[in-house]
Length: 579
Image (cartoon, rainbow, N blue to C red; front, top):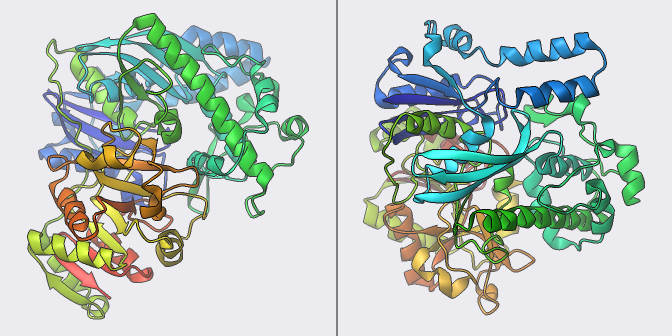
């Protein structure tokens, strides 16, 4: 059975294809169109997925979308009647909504072929999120939790998953949303683009939660698993998820009632170009504290309800790696799994897996989820690229090295202070660069953050850089020792180790780590191992291979980024370009 999964008309449009339960390919559309969080039809992603199997779209058994028109239908109607008095407005709203659930027409428009309606499957948004996590874990049984802004009229859903079935037992309904709460206050802090919540998460470490009591009032002082938000502080019905593009970046219309929030907090909304003040860092810290408290209340309620040691987390809020890193120590759960594209992009994967497993009795447990599901390029393709761009490449020293030579030489150059663009294998699935589309440098360098921001990244100086570490050395450097293969958790670095790795130690003494093993990524593993042999430091600073744009997808984009920045070395498979 071949199932094509699609995320469409949410942010981070994407596609995934599975065959007989095996994940063949998965990719976000932004990597092809070069627009962050692209939300329109993922034509290029679908095309890539089909090409991996060398098939046409009419040869797919099912096409699944991570939304369902029938989920929570009566809740939607009741809410709309209460909120909107004009019947014509309600009718118009649901007419526009129904356009989303006509996938066969979208496919016909883009692929010039008719698809039977019987092949189209609409999967509940949160079931898709949960499926993307549970079916990619190696748990036979797990508590499952999805938290995001909103999807199919619910914002949080939980239940229990066993073998090849998922049962949702409870939901929190729109407009009560932790995701909207966090996004609205991200806007209030002057971070105006969709997906900027990670900036608040990084900024929070610099402040104290001095606005905690004020923010509690937004929840009717109900910091509990069944939280209830006072909607007078929000403009959700008017503006939620009305996307628009500004300077090639995706935005959401304002979510907060600014006057009321300013009165509540006693501070003004920050404009994007204004200097960050202590009040802003304290507000970020308060937002993070509120989010974590409610998350832990939910999680502990789930453990008490199900008494199962495993937890699968999904949804856009699962990108909050700071909170994720505290889940085990703040609950009785023993194991946690988070899939690297936990946001809406991952819904494509979940929708496909849910269709497959709903029709198959046996589930093949994965030993480890493989996130390297995107395009790859051969040495001969890269050779052709270099020859076609001789005017550009003639400025650099170019060499071709075997794997062993390459690893040793690059490790040595990094140890000497070089910033390296590292491009190899299949592109990563999800927001994190995990060693195949990465920029690497020495974590010992106290000026590495400044160096990277001047040479390449040009981003806010309060944002931390991440360490990729040999898994068998994790316990020596971090206070926790679990695998974090997808860079989705933040852990505390041991006090006696912080001085050795200042470039990847955040102000609060933490690091958003990626643990690396030989069977997970052999080339990247060997590079870190060779660096360790030189320096006795079993990790590298690893940040995404981009410059305020989506992560590079193909060698030409990597070369272009290398040329226009001040990177020292570019590795394209076995080809090496040096300044």
